[in-house]
Amino acid sequence: MKTFTVDLDPPYKKAGLSGEGLSPSLTCIIHDTDPDRKFPAIIAVPGGSYEHCSKREGEPCAARWYSHGYNGFVLEYSCVDKPFPTALLELAAAVSYIRKNADRLSCDGRIILCGFSAGGHLCASLGVHSDRYAELFSENIRPDKMILCYPVITAGEYTHPLSAKNIAPTEELKALASLENHVSESTPPTFIWHCADDNVVPVQNSLMFAAALSEKKIPFELHIFPKGGHGIAMCDNTTIKNNDPRYINPVAAQWFPLALRWEQQS
Image (cartoon, rainbow, N blue to C red; front, side, top):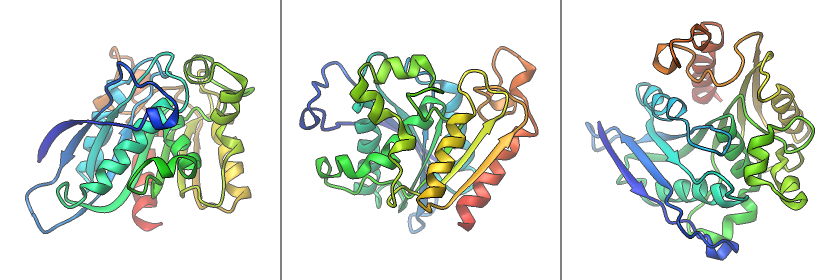
């Protein structure tokens, strides 16, 4: 295993943003035992209401995928009053970096995004808006697949207010950040899971996105687990918080083997 962190350099100014004081980074967890073997890439994108990047939803997720034959990456993106598309450009820069350096990173060219909560919103933002920002990058920034874990999707009726406040302070930005309205034929295949009793990010977020994918005939898989609330990450001891048993949820923990099977078979 080789682990290192690189600084990203998104094209903020080309998108009309200053970029001042921003320092997004990408932590890389790479297989390096067989120089001739290439692996798909998983970018773990943690949540945190666009207020912070949750450590529980970053490296533990990337490490789990690494253990199943993927190269794992963790995006540290800009938060707090960073309007759309700041973080989107940073995720796009991570995708571009991996594609540009695929041989050096032992990657086979496939890039799957795995985002939690606000990080799920960020992944889905790139999934639906990659065409809008493609010309700003030298490499293809469209992800091959997306895995969305209890994602924020909308800035409308069922939004998570703090997430929307941080990236969509205007009506124009709220429209762009309401991703259910931007699904198109080029949106990548998507795996989604959510808990029905989530009182932080309503399950309607996932249901609306799934409906939009269905309307555009985009392949998707959706799992709604009955209990678990929000923020349960890997649902086991690796991501427990404050020794709270709510974070150990064997039923919802099925999301990972289900997502792994979906990714490998779809």
